[in-house]
Length: 453
Image (cartoon, rainbow, N blue to C red; front, side):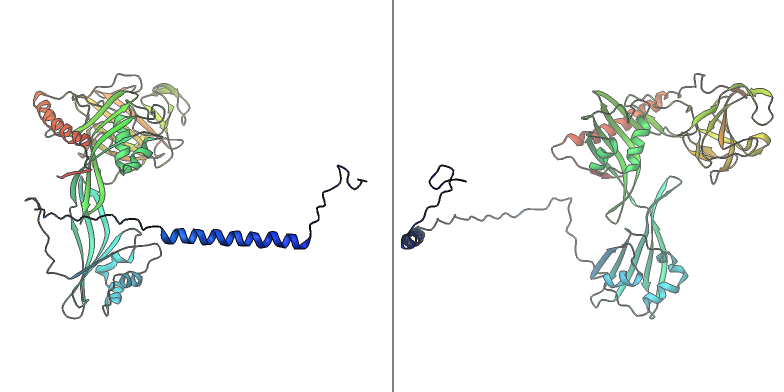
């Protein structure tokens, strides 16, 4: 137990009540004096001078190539909305401020308007109204971009009053506007991350990787700081970008080494990609007709998986799931398409000179192919299956010279035929145009949309 007054005893300072009250009063008086002095200082402090504001104006003359758009005389109001998930036709018409008696019923029952039955999220619906809010036309842009046989088109459904209290529905189609687009980027993590940052479509990124895959392993070889410049086709419809076309030129700097690819189509021949010096980036034949597969049986003697006897295997088998796309390994013409005993569904392509290739055991052929059809290297011709003498889904591929099977995995495949003198001259002209366009990327303000084609 601690004794009172000992060093271990707690302090117990007692002060008279009147003394504590004195401290409180003087403290309050001091605070009041400080507040008064501070207020007086604020009251007498002069106001800060206001800055002088100057205004200037200048009349600018528009360049001769620009025109002033005058108001349209066809309609007074334009409205547009994007389809959202869960949207109904009634909700779209309400957002567009359309209140036309009988319109919704017409769209529901009229067979010519059946495309509006499928509302794709992200697609646009537009309407034009006059000054009295009467409908002039309604458009559903259900197919802003599609490409068939090398031609691009945009399609939409257009609804308009018929002048008799009813409506007309008609499908419309026109070619979107082709443009050239430029972009440049730098690798920080991956190719797709870099192209996404520059708003480059995935379809163009895939073409870049495909064209330069023989030079760059885009999984293992990429380094932070690698750069690229690209020129490609883009399509717009009514001012909106609706799709991308072909990669025209790309220069990729990987670990200090520059690799290029440029599209060139010689007259009366199929097009292809070349480096900026005119050297083809692809041989006349690809090693494989499948993009992702494994060799399950090589060329040469083997025990037949069905008959059990030893026999010569005249091709290479590639194991792949049924339905895997099969691509032509070279430009050619369909010599045979149909069924042949052990081969099942088979296509034979005739190439330049004495070269032919065979693709067997297909589950089905690509639509539209027939004897005499022209195909390009890499073009889809069919799908992996197990027809004919096959124990499971795979592609049997044969490479023939003068109708004699050759091992495609070991033979030196024919190189791409070099450009002739006249073709080289045309290539030089095309490349000069590409290089001039790419040089715009080094301007102080680099454009992305270069010009209409």
